[in-house]
Length: 498
Ligand code: BES
Ligand code: MN
Ligand code: ZN
Image (cartoon, rainbow, N blue to C red; front, side, top):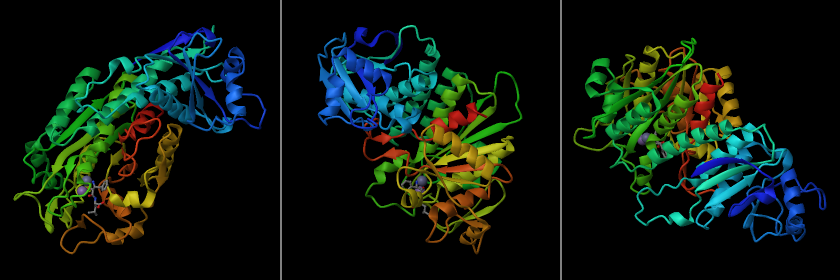
């Protein structure tokens, strides 16, 4: 889908569908907002105010009504779309509205749609969020459907319409929205790949290809190298699979040289999680292809970072492995030695994410990362604790956590702070090794985070448990079902706003 910018009076825009954003009315009979809505209402002889007075439309967020052959307009149809309460409206809402507008019109033979931002909404930030939302809304996880897509029914141009003579919005805002959306859609497409098509090596190949397209340095550590480095925790997980593991590393360095900050982004890349010998139940196991969503988010973020060029060094580390059952697989009770030197008793082979992340965090620190953020579909327990709307955020550094949370909030990615007080260390006691890989019955997401904390030394670190947020079991009006691409926006903004 193409995205374009057009500076034109709204009655003169020749598109199949013109989208008019509308707020909830403050009180019955009060002025229509924003200015776009008022203008469209005047040009059409009161078509929109009639929608409100009839009670058919209230302006509630994402409410949508399609009107055909509006009088006084060059556009063939008007899509009147709700933006919620004016005082609660921001870029997060506009991103959703853009996605919802696109999804309403998809398959309705509107090749060209225009979205009007009147003078009160026409800003760079809004334009970026709108274009980003539209491109996110356009994504479908249907790459393996053979049904020919009805190309003639899809939207192929999305135009942001700003007032004539408006100089406050430039093409740069659109491009930024596109970069952000394409990074997230790259992540979503990777996550949607089934495990027979996305093995650890294939994931590494895709990272390498993206890196060469975007001008990032790529290095992939193979099993032999991991053995030399003593990554026993990571290798223990990988040993049950015929597919060799890969530790994918992508490096971005700022054009103006070193800044002193070196951000390490670490993402869990389990291409399939059977649970290993501590095998998972069959019901729902197919979803475990998304157990590499943290790794995919890190790779997607690097794609955008390569283009937006922040002023700090950023390195991505993705341990890619498959957690399988076989005669060679690791057993409960096995003891492995991590790269840090700590020994781990593997009490449950299904708690594999923390094992591969442990060695990867150590490696990132040995490479000189000053700050670490990891994203992982780490525990079912975080889904029990927070459900599907908030990422669980754990940290050993309050200031760093607040920084990450603030950025996440501005990007519309919700995070909720979770505790990792020293008391929880009691959950991680092993009779035979330095650490067990699981805690007790309670606070499962916390004991997983406590385990990771043992490997981050003194570095400021934030751990994001995205098990509840990386996959949408149901589609939303603005996003298809399947992979959500969560954490990409936070990672990119964190690097950009350092
Ligand atoms: N990948 C899973 C976590 C997960 C579970 C994500 C359900 C999404 C939905 C992880 O590797 C895992 O299996 N964790 C175990 C840990 C347990 C054995 C301590 C879990 O959460 O059950
Ligand atoms: Mn598991
Ligand atoms: Zn897992």
